[in-house]
Amino acid sequence: MALKVDADRIRRNVEGIARFGRDPAGGWSRFVFTEEERKACAFVASLLRESGMTVRTDPAGNLVGRLEGVDPEAPAVASGSHIDTVPRGGMFDGVAGTVAAVEAVRVIRENGLRTRHPLEVIVFANEEGARFGNALWGSRALLGLIHPEETVRCRDRDGITLAEAMRACGFDPDRVGEARIDPNRYRAFVELHPEQSCLLESEGAAIGAVEGIAGTAWMKAKLRGRADHAGATPMNLRRDALAAAAEIVLAAERIARHECSPRTVATVGQMTVQPGGINIVPGEVEMSFDVRDLAPEALDRACDAIRDCAKRVCALRGIRIELEELGRVMPTPLAGQIVELIEETCRKKGISCRRTVSGAGHDAQLMALVCPTGMIFVPSVGGVSHSPEEKTEWQDLAAGAQVLLEVLWKLSQGGAG
Ligand code: GLV
Ligand code: MN
Ligand code: MN
Image (cartoon, rainbow, N blue to C red; front, side, top):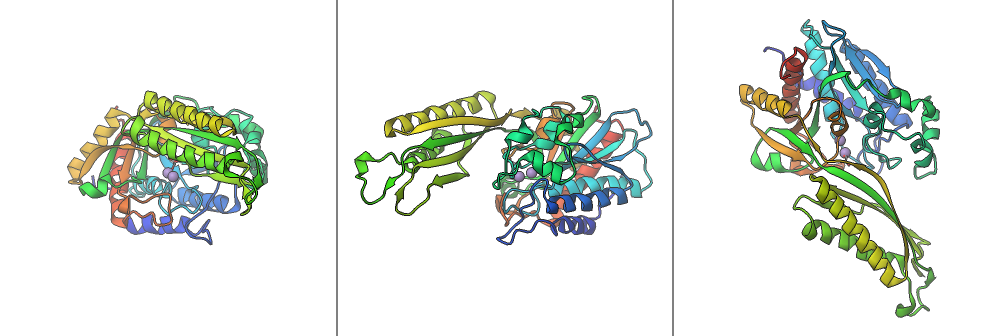
């Protein structure tokens, strides 16, 4: 097939999105329902229109472009990713897959071709969950998995609720349920994404065909000890919430490293200490846990072990602890026929490809519940991600976009069913 992505245009579009949400402290902080994120969405919407697609924004904030196929009744073949970031995140996470999807449709359209199935590009809102602690928002909304209470329960650091942030951007939080799609809407979904790890780079492979995505559990703990005078309180009389938290951080690391499966990972990425004085024994700590594994039982075991250990540490130190699970996404196998289609496409083009799994979470995880779903990984330089240093070489991104284009073309012609 002579269809070919335009590597320069891909670069221009990635850099175009990067104009929005620069963080003065470094990297990008482009959070859902902020002015910068909305501007970035408007920019992507203009790219979708230039690609000949009709564009709509659904009640959850997902941006969806659609190019009709010969058979408008046929289920659509979709691709896409996200454009929100973690705090001080990188330039490629989510953006790479968004731009690659737009490019694929544009090339098909520019060549005057018509697919049998409609094509859709989905820019999922709030994949990272960075602002409100609620990841995979857009894809959960498509599946009807948002509890109405989530928009009033979730607050950002300034105390603004998700509902308030939505209203400020012209959305009605009471209508999120209307974002739910007909489960038969899609024939297939394929997301391109940087690998965010270093397996492809270390093996010199250009493409990863993803066989499965790890499950994630997010938890929050509140530890209440007693604030005391740092000079006058003897060590044996303290109820230091931060010392307890420190023990729990190390316990979570030990549990993930040695006590569960080889794939278990656990991270404490947030901690607030009160009252926060240099001469005050810490009275209160709030801390987060992010626990992941590819096997559901191993994920359960890791979460239980961390919870039990945190309770034990606190009991021994006279600290009260409240633990809350914020959300869980189960480990997800991806569709074998799409893995094979990615491999076959690479083989025909002489592009090196290896099967792999994803430790990071993706909207593809939710889409896999409604249609055959696949992911195409492109190498991340040094495996770095969720960092301003995150980088995918431009030629690697173009090669991945070319594979995506060919995979979408085949699927939208009715292939790999
Ligand atoms: C998303 O990037 C996640 O896996 O946290
Ligand atoms: Mn991410
Ligand atoms: Mn991502």
